[in-house]
Image 1 (cartoon, rainbow, N blue to C red):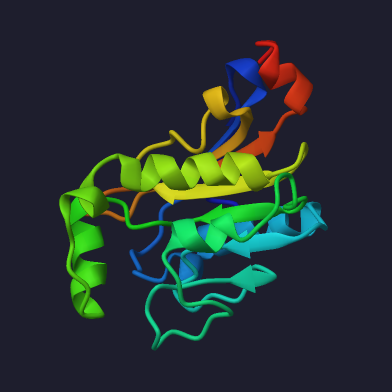
Image 2 (cartoon, rainbow, N blue to C red):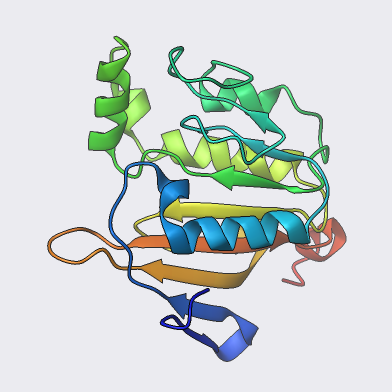
Length: 193
């Protein structure tokens, strides 16, 4: 993070950072986000996947619904994640889905797919989060991007370690980046989270 950023641990040991940056539809081209992802990616050496790559090549295995975007796979994110075995992902997941039903519609419209009630309901995100829970082994990291810090969640066995708030100025929504680690399955299964 740059010298202009604010970083301080909060209750529970979560590192909170805030750094202003210009908005960009390519999330990983936003400097403080790029810095965080690079740092976290190098921290965890295992297999990394990105179900919504948007052309980014940070993860070992990439996917994007748009066939015009270069990626390893061109599938719906849920179908992409279902290919992986239980606990297979030991590095992490970059979780940068469309942030709202409007953004889902824009993505689908841009590639000639129709949206439906199924693609714009909350289950669009929760089903993918369930798959991320299933494929992540203990210690894997998930970096989530959006307009909230919900991430994958404590109920799915993840513990927040770091939050980056990126304000963009004007009427732009801030981008929130949530870094979570998969805790030992035994702890989450027995309610010790």
